[in-house]
Length: 154
Image 1 (cartoon, one colour):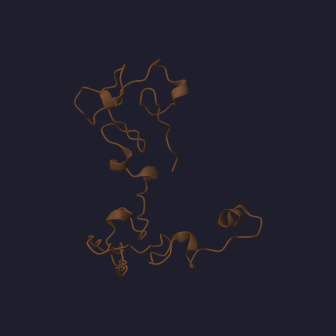
Image 2 (cartoon, rainbow, N blue to C red):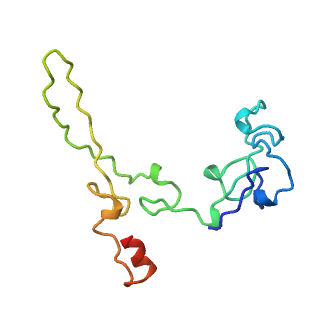
Image 3 (tube, rainbow, N blue to C red):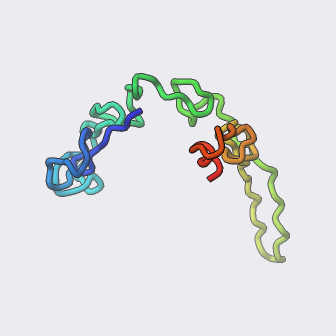
């Protein structure tokens, strides 16, 4: 997916700030010069927002109705299209570790409440107990001296 550049001066797509025809920054909400969107007194509107995904107006990339490059992005958890990993029906529920027993408190002080600890979950295999860089199912490097080998050992 190629990312379209967005201008930090006028907020429009298709050029960078160094090539912008406007001399001063414009508010991304009302597109008027002299202030930034955080100080804009105009009502907040999605009309002035421009999507970095499709270039359309009225929405941002996160809410884009047009899939990038003509294909919907696949879920990072199950690989299926139509939803994101955070909404995946196969998303494993966080596994909770056993509650640790705190050391006895001094007489007359309040006992701290035990905390529930979330167990690490791997993004590669979705199994609890380790993270992706420690995953036993991690693919092996291609060949010694290749960029892939250097990236995995760096």
